[in-house]
Image (tube, rainbow, N blue to C red):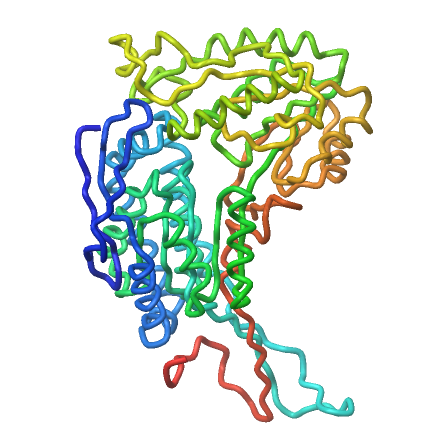
Length: 512
């Protein structure tokens, strides 16, 4: 990517300088070239963004707008995103290290679909006002009036996102927050801030009122201010479970609502009657896509002991066909990890797996002779790591329990169905999973037995029209779809001794 992008903070509808001089340099993880510079926001900058969001919610028009008005702005944001499609694809490839196919279909394509879905289906059909049953007074006597349950925006929402799917996760938090009538402060990962700042440009052009979207780039200090500040009403965080626990603890001081989408160590269960020709490509995709940097990827394969050798042999052959290299090369199937630090973490966990008795059946090293612009001159630029398959793994090992966030698969044997379900559930996580069997009714029984938020039968995919989230340590709450919008609203029950006017969103007579 040729351009060098330089941004300021976006606060109260204006592009402003940070209070300090520190900056963050954005690196292309495939080439290690600098592609942009953003400010390192301070606590004071975060407070300024929160104050702008608070004022915009308490005194501005957004929280009192109609669903039609909000849908119109969200629809215009989708139109602008569509117009900037090519630019965003190239930026995502350079900033996040996505392959072109991943950028088109998930990193940029899914956010576009999400905004249109909220503007055209979810928001127009969402029931913000619901009539109550007839009012029953004290002592069981029937009242004479009527009542209504009103769903109102929760207020100021802090949205904190990770590096792996920057535009996707930014939009999937921002869309429902805006649809509900919230004002927001968006804090993207310091590794991938550029796609978030482009959302500021898109919102500005679409006519979003000042203060409704504020964007601060920074790291731990800015995030901590968002989770602790009493002017923030809720926090939506996606990231590791370790950081999620800190977010939860920090938010508890002011009893904020918290939505957490955290880690996963999801199981892909392969029964004896499964068709390996269909299974193997899915297994490979689920740990090599985006170099394994996805919380819902199926990174534990549980295979019946009678199929173990055949499956591992087919995995090796299939992985030989996966080209690793600079994702700017359209023939590449797997790009880099996001940073040198993340690669070092993956390497350390691979060494731990070997030390604990796991055997590497494929990969395990930094690749050589990479394809694409990075490897053509024989240089070692880029944060690449080979797809790696572990066998001789016990489910108690670190590599079977800890989320690696790299292209590392553990293949575990099981003896019978009960054993498979036990191993699948023997995890502190519960985000995703799947089963492969010729009997789909049997597959549904397995889905009911595995404690996880999303489950596939003879497939695995995330449908953005359905709620997404996890059991156990994989998080709290749900995102996407109508349930995602509900996370940003509060319920108010109103009863009246007399007739209420026709149910409609009534403008508030004064600031809340």
